[in-house]
Length: 184
Image (cartoon, rainbow, N blue to C red; front, side, top):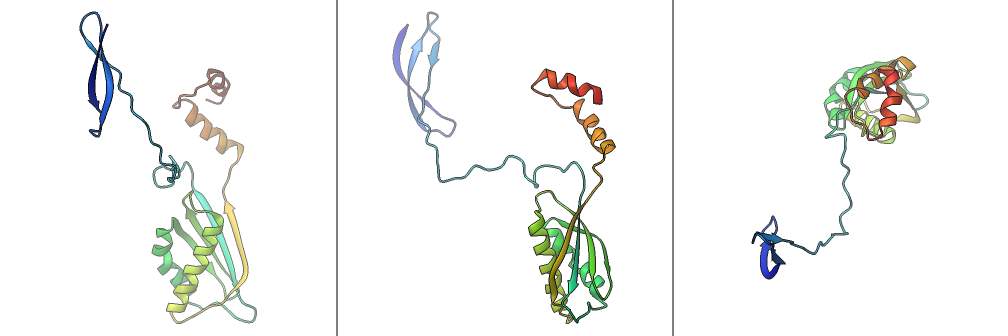
């Protein structure tokens, strides 16, 4: 084999030096090597986020709040909550069902998986309180807030989900596939 210096370029056109070796049939064989510079200032990015992955099931959060002691909620609070729905949607929080009495407001939402319970409570109360203030009916909510995650993860629901997944997914471990066949 004959060794001769050659040059090659990477995909962005950077000059790389590499020896070119010709084999017995005079076909050039190039072995390009390049030094990889890893930028350690960048943090790794998640592959799957709420923006690029579809949730498997609905996630429902219920939020309940009470006015401060000795006060009542205004009569227009349901209308204000409905008007605030478009702002909550920007946060991944979709208004489903509001209900209210003079003593409390309870709202059911459908949320995206990336919405944390803390962010959810903070954003629902903050946006609603701001909208009420803009409507001229300011409310001081009590610090007491109720948050609940609602759903039915019964055995039937989980088994139905598994049945839909096992047949269409490729698993690395064949023993796992055999074990899961009893669910399909």
